[in-house]
Image (cartoon, rainbow, N blue to C red; front, side):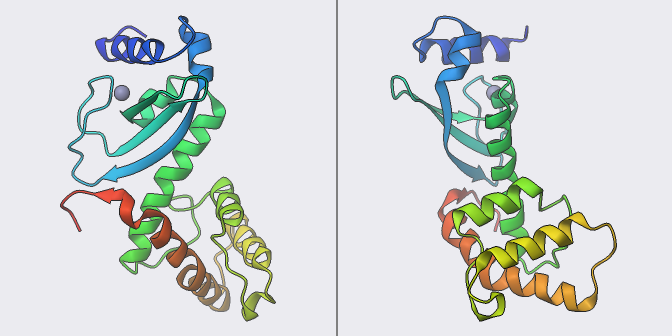
Length: 186
Ligand SMILES: [Zn+2]
């Protein structure tokens, strides 16, 4: 890491960590929150401008927080767990906007991943109802099967996908993300 942005990042993180060394300082942090700036008007703590997804990270040893930090800086922490959360969160915002605009959403990697479906299951993104025998996990399994199969879904499967998105995933995303989108566009 040699650029001025990287130097700024390293300084900010180490100044707010217990450790004085980058390699161990990066282990002290968790992702705490994220908002989307639709105007890309914000600057990362490293100084890089025009970032869209503004993450808050929190040091679990001393309680310090850093905001806003972009995903490319979080990647420099070199932590698989943080990268996973970062990417799930960015995809959730994309899915949220597509759902809100009533776009036809197919189960492809633009909006979904296996990890994202799992995240939705764990966070209550699938709702129990009479169509899934009051077991939300049935909808999760169906969506995962549809995501995994290479063949195009049948019309019947497509309308079931649509129903799950409209009745479960859309209200879940509205509840989670409505107040986390800032900016003019919309
Ligand atoms: Zn940055």
